[in-house]
Amino acid sequence: MDDSVIKIALVDDEVLFRKGLTFLLQREENIEILFEASNGDELISNLNSNQTKPDIIIMDLKMPILNGVEATKIIRKIFPEIKIIALTSYETKSFITNMIQVGAVAYLIKNTTPKDLINTINEVAKKGFFYNENILKTIQDSIPSSKNAKVNLESGFLSPREIEVLQLICNQKTTAEIAEELFLSPRTVEGHRNNLLLKTESRNIAGLVVYAIQNEIAVLTL
Image (tube, rainbow, N blue to C red; front, side, top):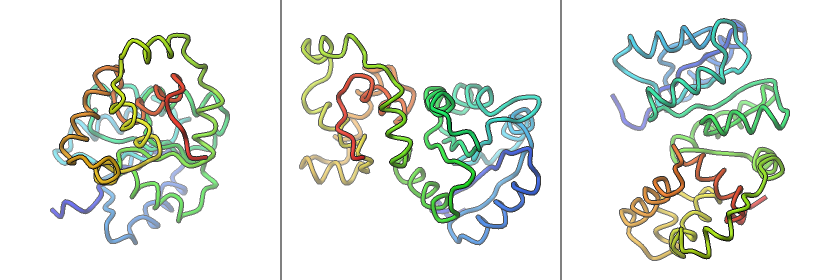
């Protein structure tokens, strides 16, 4: 199978909406729909039985049996390499920050345009996460600053280079773009990124973004 093809699973209990998404996404040459599910329980069952795993799951939040938030928590533990995009009609700050904190790497509202959805899928496949302007603003407004932020920075918790890399990650730069900007090799950038994940106890790049905002490290492009 072509590595450039993005394998997708769609999870939504609204059949008509789900079928519409399948129809839309199947028209894209670089996207393949692996399977659909109508709730989180069905999704996890599919993940366990399918040898081929999706790269990205597009997940509704409010579903019967097992909702999107609980399903995301389970998938982050069992299949941490799978990226989860929340696609929901909920746009309250609490829903957005909760989904991001449990591990969603992107958050879209259902009235988004097809172009935005496809762009988000491609950005997540390339960078590991993607937050549009509104979502970044919501994260920034909703997550309280850590009281220990300045202590962490002053005590050398993160090196100056790690802080530079983290700020560029938050500005949604790829590894290659960060390497070019800081005159480093991509492998060195990956090393810094892995150190950041370990030091901040973040499970993924999305977690790093939340940490950076929480600790007032990131200079976000809003």
